Length: 191
Length: 191
DNA sequence: GTCATATGGTTTGTATCTTAATAATTAAGC
DNA sequence: GCTTAATTATTAAGATACAAACCATATGAC
Image (cartoon, rainbow over all chains, first blue to last red; front, side, top):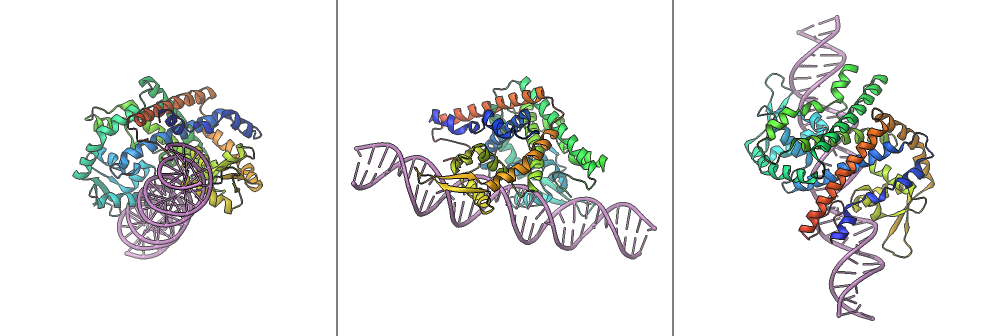
């Protein structure tokens, strides 16, 4: 099992540099470092996301539901309006409604009508939701930390810096594009 | 619009370092560089994935469907069995069946029965599928390259190296775990 | 004040993906 | 050779996500 698990877990064998370049070189805009970066980003993300989803599955929480609870817990009792939750979680408003419905039925969060703007619903985490989080987080932090333990803290920081620069590059490009076509192209909740 | 797009596109304001640390410091296993890395990885991935999905939407292709076509095109006419496609795309075998069904109805791929092992179906890209790819790829490569143009080639390579190291760290941890509980814990297609 | 417009939230319909169960075929034990 | 186990693909049911259409409320123009 220990030999085969190596083979089964690592799917990167399907992406050989030579094969990719051979197929793509007829396109003048093709650029290997960019493609390589994309592949590695997607693959790293998928490994981590799949793993964390499995941890959370024990508690019957999706990744988004877990992040929602964490964001509410961080707000220190103040809660957040639904549309801000959507932005923070990078999901649509419609999806937030569903997420909150689900967590509200389980008693983990509650909706409160905003006193000044009656369109707005504030979502707050309940005592029960906080207790659930506190039962998950110690193990969660430990497992995630173990997952990345072959990188030194300096390497983690370096990786974070480069990922941040990548984000900025993307955001700037999107801004430029949304300035050009003034119809307001937007990612996420494209209102 | 140009000022507001900055605000609307960039959702990172919802994750303040101080707020995260204040909430998490009661957990001894919490580790800021790890959490920061995770946030940046998820955020960078989401930006790119959302953007590419919008490009592909013009052609009525999902990200997986697009990757499936590319993998088949790279195989140089030989095609691939369904279960290998699932591994390469990091999705379940059931999902591959559905993807291929959809692309087959549109005439972009075809199923061929394997002559030696009659359980196996080989999927090949058709002429029509190749033509579709060739209409997408020039623009696709150009747009993606523009998206990451604030990183030098050296920075892209550095980022790739670190992401690769991150992948290895995760894979090694998963291997260790699957060795411990010998029931064969596995990500992806957990057979 | 009134009408037009924008914003917050929900509902509805649809797409994508996963797990579990199933059928067909192959491989392995004896 | 026959039985058991493993593998490939499919089907079915359910989770999670998005876009578009829809109300309720708020804001702005006049």
